[in-house]
Length: 117
Image (tube, rainbow, N blue to C red; front, side, top):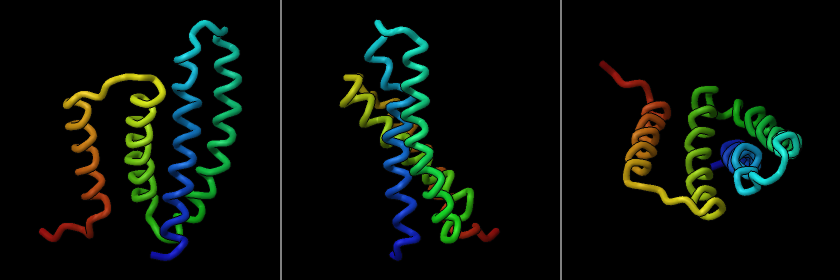
């Protein structure tokens, strides 16, 4: 696999780690003012964009837009699952696993060559 195929994946993983903290990291600090959470989240989101935009720009030469978006969603779910367990201390249930598996099944069809009917 060449770097134009791998770089977008790595950049999307990094970008999703930042975005997950921007969206959900403040939930551990509910004693702080909401405006502080918003400002800090926007600052984190800026860093996220510094990885997401190049990921999509580089990746578009190798992947279709639908494939990039699908990749991003699967990566988001993976990062979110780890974040919610490791950072927020929440439990994932079998229902979460089934739902995530169904989304991954959908991703399979996005990347699969067109089905011949």
